[in-house]
Length: 78
Image 1 (cartoon, helix red, strand yellow):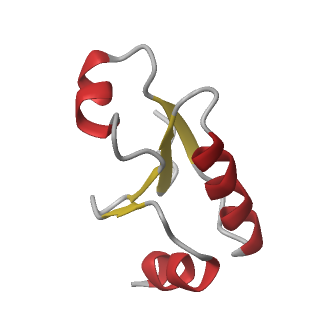
Image 2 (tube, one colour; image 1 turned 90 degrees about the horizontal axis):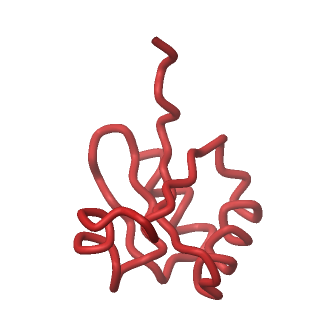
């Protein structure tokens, strides 16, 4: 079984804030991440619907939007 990517970005289709979060991830030179689309998953919609975009690391910590590149780098390295 392949190892999970340590970062996951929860987002939805047609989400301008999600597009901005992707730009911040690029600016921060974040490592590879998995995109988790919440649109068609009722449980994820309930948990993240009003919070997306949300970045989660493998230890379960989550970073809600808004975040900038320095905040993102600190979050990832903590």
